[in-house]
Image 1 (cartoon, rainbow, N blue to C red):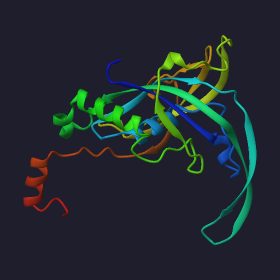
Image 2: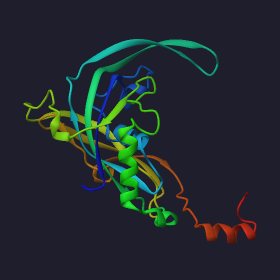
Image 3: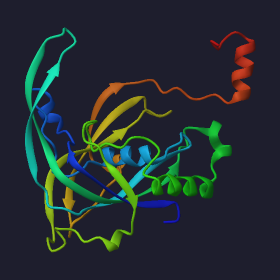
Image 4: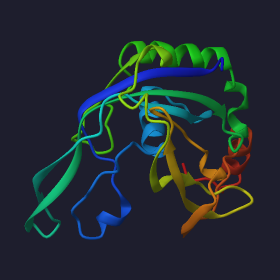
Length: 234
């Protein structure tokens, strides 16, 4: 795909939190990264409100191994507690992603220049990304570099199929037609070391997180007219 990027991302630790473990406060990681986590990494490399990143596939390069650490957390009431977090250790992934225009932002239609954004994304990728990169949690620092998807061999290249069960995939955000925020779940299966993600809107399992009112972005001319009428706070 002509507006896609392929990058290698790696780090010492990763924590892609399983939502079930958040209830007790002692986080445990998924075995593989989620769609939303990889989308966050792509957005940290380069992002503009004109488009959204779509994660196509990810290759699990190194063997899946975990380690547990004792974490001391400080609460808002200045108390502290000792918790045990389970991280992934020594991780490396190869990710392929592409961007698509955000059609909910008609005010940015004039910025829909595919070549411009694609070239900027590739330049930022070659320099290690525009913003700080993390593998799930902020303490899990990540590094990226461009690469070729087929040039890296997965540890699980000989495993025909491996299912990780039902996992959190990503969010569906409110639109003009639906004022709901959905959390989407999907059965994630790895084939020969590669996971091909389905988009959140393609996932059959959904959970309504909250009711949220969609706010359309007015054009600059509309803002000027409303400002004259006293409808816009400045």
